Image (cartoon, rainbow, N blue to C red; front, top):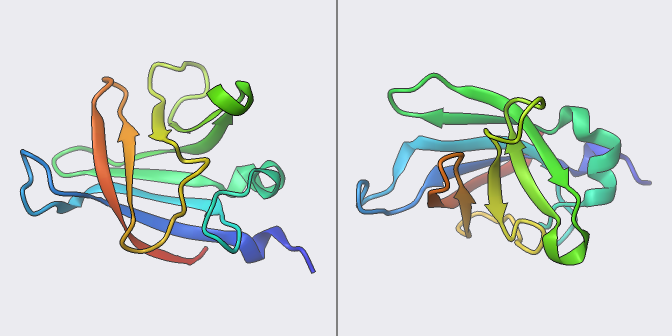
Length: 131
């Protein structure tokens, strides 16, 4: 039985160790909903059917939370990418996940996200739970 709600997971990413945060930070990160396959990869086919439920919340100490959507930008096998989009009228605010299409989202793994200013930050997957 294939039911997209069975695949939707709530994934939390906390900022990993960095120059400004040598111990990482649970006050800087993202929480988002995405369909994951059995290997922990984002399932683009299920996303197409459930994209309206794939919401992201960016939390950053000292700033107001931003709410957006997980979006798959086209571009073929080499240039397609997953982004967090906070305003669908512009690409200026998109935050791109580095190699999200090939990355497995499992607790303890690390991922990188390029923010809207072009800076790359590394995050650790701290939870993956049913959405």
